[in-house]
Length: 136
Image (cartoon, rainbow, N blue to C red; front, side, top):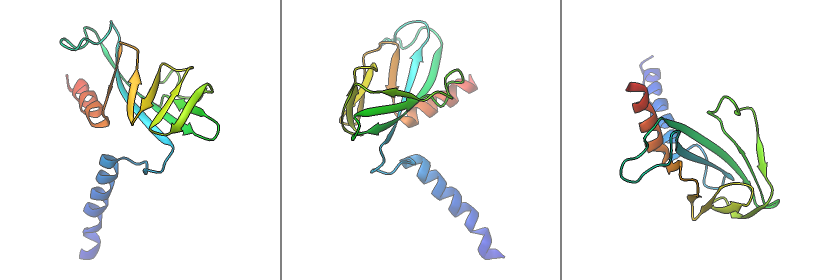
């Protein structure tokens, strides 16, 4: 019975490591964008956001063969059931793509977004700020 008690901490450690380093393997064609959206106005480099911050994630499935990007918003109740498709794309790989139908793309693994009310952040910073917003 003592042998089984050591399994639970090991399982928890493995799950924590999977979350920390991401669920998606390096060969996956999926990518998640974590961003904070300023409801009132645009983000200011000095002052941040004047109004309420909305935390959003966008899941992308990148298809090199068809030059398409399928995307959805898992946290937005109003559109969480919708799967959207951008057809007018140039896709080299999951870390390098852009679509004329969307306001964003990825260059060398970094999100490029021309919308001033969005601020793209890392997964860890996004979760930190989101948890912190619940505590305030």
